[in-house]
Length: 359
Ligand code: SAH
Ligand code: SF4
Image 1 (cartoon, helix red, strand yellow):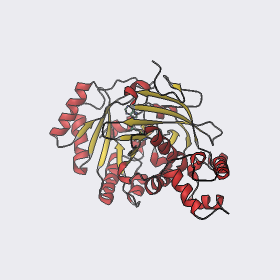
Image 2 (cartoon, protein in one colour):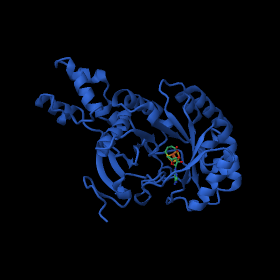
Image 3 (cartoon, rainbow, N blue to C red):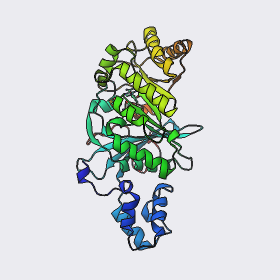
Image 4 (spheres, rainbow, N blue to C red):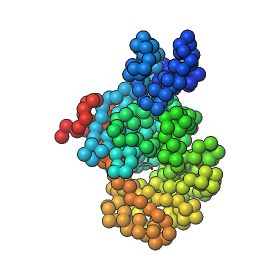
C-alpha cells in the first residue's frame, strides 16, 4: 500500500519540510510545521505565508483523508466520520468517532483499515484486514477531529477505532510521538487499546512516553478466550498477564481491561470471579461495554441490570469497574461496529458537510 502513496501531509518529517522549503527564509520551516501541527491548518489557510507558497504547499502536501460522509447522534455530541484514504489505489476506508462529553472531548481513531485479528463479535474483525495506515494518516485523523470539535478542546485520543494498533506498531508509535511532541496531546491522554499482542505490549513498555494501555480481555479463562479472541491461542492469558504486569511496572500507568458483556457467555458470577482474579493483582480498572450487536454474531449483549450486577460483583471482589456508555450505537459508531469497506457505506449517513442527522 505504501508504495503507491504520494507524500501525505502528516507523513513528512521536519527534514522533508526543510527540503521542500529550500530557498525560503529559515524561519518558514517552523512556521509551517507549527501551522500544520499546533494550529491544524491547511497550507492554503496559512495567511502568514506568501500566497504562491501557500498554493505550492497545498499541492505538494495533499491531505491523506477525504471525508466521504458523516453522521451524528446523541444530539450532535457523537460524530462518526467515514474517510477514504487518498493515497491508496484500493480506495481504503476508515472511520473515526468524535465524542463530546460534559468535561472532555475524545476522539476514537483507527490504526488499520479493517482488522485481521478475527474477534468473533467485532464488525471490523468480521470484515478482515484491508491495509495498514501510515503514521500521517493516523495523525491526520486527530487533526481533523480537533478542528471538528471546536470551539471545544479535543484533549483525549483513544486507539479504539478500526484495527489492532500493535499489529501496525511502527506507524502507531510514530503517530503517538508526533501527537505528543508536535500536536500537543499529552501521552497521558492517549490510550492504546490492544487485543493482547504480547510482544507489542513489551515493546510499548520500553518506549519513552507512557501512554495508557487498555487490554481487551473479554474472558479470563483460556478456553473461552480462545473462542472469542482467537489471538489468545498464540498469546494465552498467563503470558498476557505477565506482559501487563511489566507494562504497569515500567510505565507507572494504570492498566485497564475491556470486557464486552455478552449475554450468557461471559457475564456469569464465575466470569466475574475469574476476571477479578486477573484484575485485582494488577490493580487494573475494568471497563464493561454491553456488547453491540453486529451482523456476524447473533448473541445479545447483557441487559443493563445484568451489567450493573456484574459491576457490583466485581466491586465486592475488590475490582473497580465502570460501565461504558454506548455512545453512537444508533449510528453504528460504537465499539466493534466500525466496518467501513470499499463499496459499503454503513447507514444512516448524511452527506459530507452536513451538520445534523437528517431524521
Ligand atoms: N483492536 C483493538 C482496538 C479496537 S477495538 C482492541 O481490540 O482492543 C475497541 C474495543 O471494542 C475493544 O475492546 C473491542 O474488544 C471492543 N469491541 C469489539 N467489538 C465489540 C462489540 N460488538 N461490542 C462491544 N465492544 C466491542
Ligand atoms: Fe480487531 Fe479489536 Fe475488532 Fe478484535 S476487537 S477484531 S482486535 S478491532
